[in-house]
Length: 458
Image 1: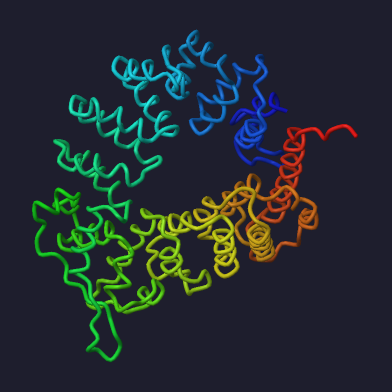
Image 2: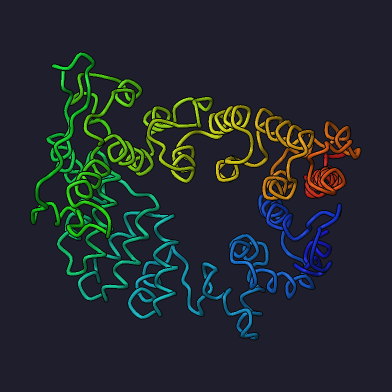
């Protein structure tokens, strides 16, 4: 099966319509994930083709190199075309130490190449966050600015309150980019001192006006960006086309703990706060900043409030300013809730705007989401819709629908009668696309079954 998946090269079947044959190369990531999860190792004879595939697709590299094991690194040292493996794989450097060997770790940190040091710090951070931070602190003042920025980024994994002291010191760094990254990381820690400072600044700009017939949020954006704000990560110069005051306000609200707002705005819940009107045209700026804060702080309650109901007119979550923003908000919810929201969105609004939202849903899709996608595709087919505009969603369905759905789709394989206003050839295209979908689902089911552990003999 692996040989067949690796032999399917892009463009091998010629340009134009794909036909009803599955796109095997697109199934390789799932096959590798399943093989790794079950502890399999690559057959040695498959390694050249596997490395060639990973060379052409960076998204394959982590899973492919884990499956390939140490032999891939040995081969990569012999063939310049595969040198990416030495950079991408933990342990790819010639002298990568055992992380349980403190002397070896410190030697590589002090003497290794930059790529080796980044790999070492990332690996150590996932194993012992405090040890990785201590290692970084030892050489921090002697590192180049661009290296400090990359090393600081490694602290995102396992970020916690113990990192605050180091990050506060980084706010005084010589590099503006390092300072900005340190501030961003601190604002993701709602209990940090920086978050408290930003919360106080943001709260001074936003209040509820109770003198109106209907209570409304009023905004008084900052009139200046002082040195203390800049030290805490606020960028003073606004991008072209943005007003300075709205630019500063957005940064303050984005970095403020979301727990600031219920107390500041009359004890209201996130849903009640989002539902309040905002005076003088500030709603878009304020809600967009709350969206960014909810994503940064991984706050599911605020994400739900900002997303709103999936059946809302125009899918207009009150704070979701774009499909990309909705997708990021959805990513803060658990997999089941995410799938249910996207299913409701599709049932109300169809598939035309759903592609980005589907991309954040767990695979295989939960049954309600799978049914919503298939039903929407069927409706589009029966309506004579232009079929090629749904090719992206159909491709996602091939990779993400639960393979058990295949038998339910057999009824969709027939070529339907074409409405008079249908695109020429649409009916045969839809039939072909559903045939490919069913064939791919059955193939996915078979390949996963092949990798399943054998049942013990009775």
